Length: 144
Image 1 (cartoon, rainbow, N blue to C red):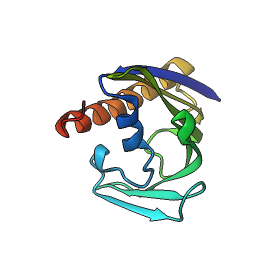
Image 2 (cartoon, one colour; image 1 turned 135 degrees about the vertical axis):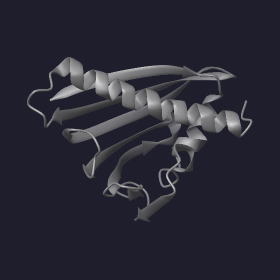
Image 3 (cartoon, rainbow, N blue to C red; image 1 turned 90 degrees about the vertical axis):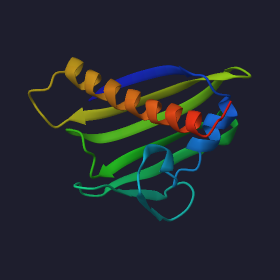
């Protein structure tokens, strides 16, 4: 089992970033055209349908608005060579105009030839891409 922690400063108020991420069933910011929401609240699944891929199920495991944090698992369809994937995200205010996004996960590589450094590099790239999408979406929306 491997783990990674990633942190990135975003030039937006923490409340604006949290408002985007706390709506677990809405993935418009990531360009996902079809999200099927199954259930509500903790335990809900967002099933992501993307061209050329099997659906990806992401299950909301926890959510705490007071700490602007949530965790989720991906029990089906993860497009990475891993299993037992559980991620946590937390938004932390730096000041009135910026915040830190903390993202971390634990998982197990399914490719025996992949060492921990390669797995961490792949996951780092995934979180960089996710936060690029958050930043681009909020910039396009004129959030400040």
